[in-house]
Each structure stands twice: as C-alpha cells, then as structure tokens.
Length: 377
Image (cartoon, rainbow, N blue to C red):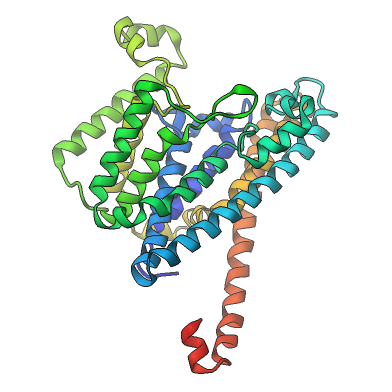
C-alpha cells in the first residue's frame, strides 16, 4: 500500500457496494438508507466514478514509471480477469436462481432476474454472454466496467497530459448520446441497460479527478452544488408522498425532469452525482474518522471491490429467497440484509489477512534472489 493512498476512495467504494447489495434485495427496508432516496443518482454512479478514479490513479503511475505499453498490458490483463470473473459469476448466479425458483412459490425469480431468455435460447444466450450481450439483472455494472477499463489504454496518454481535452471530448460524446440516443445492441434485439457511451463520462471525470483532485476550488460553485443537492433531496423524498410531490413539483418542471433515465445517464443524474462528489470532496477530509472500527470495515471492503461485488451479486437472490420462504416478514427482510453485509465484511477481512500473510513470504523469497533478479522483479 502506498503512503499517498486516499483511503476515502476505498471507504466510499465499500459504501457503494453495500448500497448496491441493499438496493438489489426487493422490499429491503435498509434500502431506504441508500443514495437513491436522497437524490437523482444512486450507488451505480458512485461505483463507476470511483472505478475511473482508482484505475487512473493506479495505471497512471505505471504509465509514468514504465511507459504506456506496460500500463496497457496491466490494464488489459485486469480487463481479462474481470471478463473471466463475469463468465464464472453468471454460471454461479444461474445455478442459484434456478434452484431458488424451484423452492419459491410467491414470485418468479427466473423472470425477475431476466433469465427467461437463457431458458428459451440457451445456445444463443451463451454466445451473447461471451460477447457481453446477455447480462442478467444484478450483473450489469461488471460488463460496463470491463468495457470502460478495456478502453482506458486509448485515452490514458492524453488524459495524463491534457485531462481537460479528454473530459471535453467525453462530454461531447455524452451530449451526442443524449441527442441521438446511441447505444450498444444487447441480446434479443435489446440495448445495454448501462449504456457505455453515456456512462463513460463518469469514468473519465473520475480519472481526471484522480489527476487533478484540487482543480476546482470555488466557494460559489460549492454553494451552488450544495443548493442543488438540497433541492434534489426534497424532490426525491417527496416521491414517497405523492400528494406532497404534486404540490411541490410544477407540471412544467415535471415534464422536463421525468423520466430520469438511468440507461443513458440522464443529465440531472449526472449533475446530481457531480454535485454530491464535489461537496463530499470539500467537506470530507482524511482524518481520524477513517480509523474507527466501522469505517475500517467499510474501507477494507472497498479495497477488495471485485470480490465483494461478486459476493453481493450472489447473496442478493439468496436473501430474496430467504425472505420469500419467511413470507417476506419485516424481521426476515432486515436480518438477511444485515447478514449479507456481515458476510461481505468477513470476506474482505479474510482477503486482507491473506494479503498480509503473503507479504512476508514474498519479501523473504525476494531477498533470496540475486540482486539483479530483485531489481528485475
């Protein structure tokens, strides 16, 4: 671990993983505490933004030290690992869903997870899965991350030298997507739920933020962003009370605002998240709060985001099945969500412990090598 690592990134990434898990469990009471309840964006925006931030921070250092080619090899190797994990995760998820569906009578989990296409067209579904065209529910963020990461070598050299140019180009593509409705084809004549042509803007802005974390320091901008967050929170909270919402929201504004499209990352979603990220960066500093027990658990989860995300994808339908078998009782819904987070925490701690135990062995083995081999390693 480097000394200049920003532990806030790991903390908020861990928090995003918890929120994604809770949001994926139907009727989960704890989902009332996630980001989607207090604004127009949710944990998906946070996850993609921080993915770009972490990727550029890590691979940008490699590019500066060893060159673009070496960095590109590292990036593409990581993208390949994500691709293999995606295929394996789909097989595990389908097995869980098919078994769970045979035990649950109150809902069709196969259809809820968008796996009916696989049952009707298994051969084509397998081909579409290998091409990232078939993405059951819960798994959409991973193919999006694979595509965005695989494209990083194309923009990394210019991003390191002229980040403003890359951000401007990214915003231009985003604007064209909003205007023209461009997307990538998916299975059964569908489209990607997370349109990479639109969501790339968050990944790129996250990467630029890693390079220039203090680029924008304006009190007026902070006040405007905070005001927008307050208005967004009032509107989002009013959704729970339609009468209050109708009283607060003029019809003309509602026609402009709705629907808040997630597939193409509607501008109001993007603005809300950028305002949230900007205010958080200004208000939340690296300090003693990160050393508290709960903060350290969440930070450790964020440090092992791939493994924790995969576990969350597996646990969400299991929690839904357990809730269905318990007649969707409030106690069951609360318990399964908390047990899932506990299991995610346990896995992250086990991964952290395994990493610490490997370090002395690696260091000892490295010391046993001749000096020229150690320098090469």
